[in-house]
Image (tube, rainbow, N blue to C red; front, side):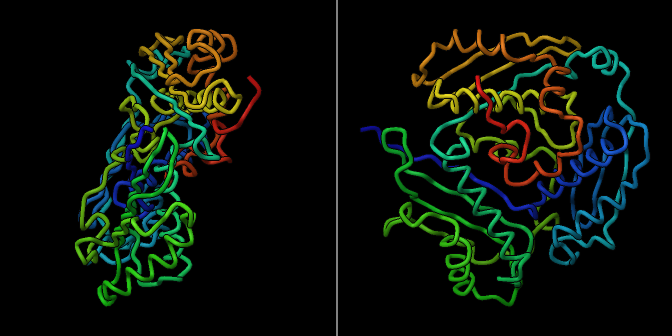
Length: 369
């Protein structure tokens, strides 16, 4: 009987890296609202009461970058420069140029916006076809934000992290070994009260009772204090939570980040398409677990390679699945964009709590294969 432990983490929307992802994706959505063919590659950097925007944007329209930044900070719930960041007083530096013509000449004719490798993954161990550990870590992080915004625990602040260790037996989740939650809070709250409140309002309301037992370890703010957070406690940067964004480390990652990139960037659209295909291979009963790799070259339309791995769970051979994929799907960048309707301003919905496993996103749709 094979037994092992696997751990994944998630972060709240108030984590400084996620603040930056949210700003970048909000800018992307506003560009696409005005011009569906917008070319966007924008990075956000957050430091002590300062936001820096940099990147390349080419589109027909106008954007108030400063307004987006300040509104995003306010919506997340930040408000004090002395403990995180102030939306009214923070400094904003903007350094945005147009897309390089050397890149545009390849993308304009339907080629990939860059070289790279992308992965998609799915497993039947959860209803969302996501690995159990990252699925549970996201649910806890989302619940942590909810109890703050709904003022169930009004002393919480926006910054936070969750981590879940799952015990597997014969490749199936058996129980949760460890739950770790770190959350920013007001200085007045005592550690014991915080721990009790988080267990009652976040953990017990989120984690199935049959997955926790008397041996499950629960850690809340292990240092004992988390008052200073956000960009004051740690700098933030777009694209620094790529494992949180995908499969929690349970599957491979090609290395390219998603947020702030329009769909001509195959780092984003290619990864979304591979998730769609992997999920449907599992949902259609062809395998219990599936990982797909695809590779592209800048300016070229067709992928250079496709690789399928079903980890010995396939009802079809991996060669048969590759053939099926090539017959069923147009994997050119334009083909992916059309198939998934990726020119819509949907990207702010992807930013937090994972880009996969959300039913309202087009790449999560189950089809007949």
